[in-house]
Image 1 (cartoon, rainbow, N blue to C red):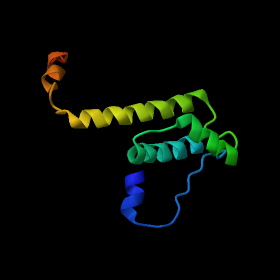
Image 2 (spheres, rainbow, N blue to C red):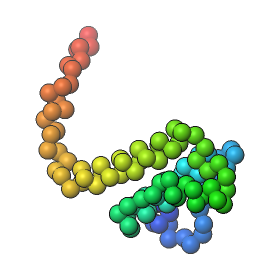
Image 3 (cartoon, one colour):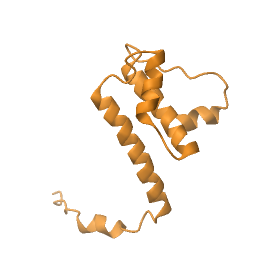
Image 4 (cartoon, rainbow, N blue to C red):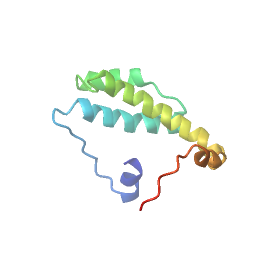
Amino acid sequence: MRRHIESEGSEAPTVVHCSDGVGRTGTFIALDVLLQQLETEQAVGIKEFLHKMRLHRSHMVQTESQYVFLHQCIMDSLQLDVTQEEHIYENADLIYDIAIPLPELP
């Protein structure tokens, strides 16, 4: 989403809103800001950022699963950075070793 926003070149703000405007909206906003922070600062503070968000609007990121989702996205982003430094097709043959042959159609 961030790449799309930046590719448009518009200075207009992006509007994000779910049904109540806090749970999923907060998760989306937090993820966007935290991924940008990770890119620029090479570190993130999820708990600190959520606290800061909640000072301005309570209940941002409402559920435990949303909180876990943020952590998992950050971890996935970090893994992606490591994978990009390695050769992506290094273990491609393993995919075919574990494949199960499909029966032939009549």
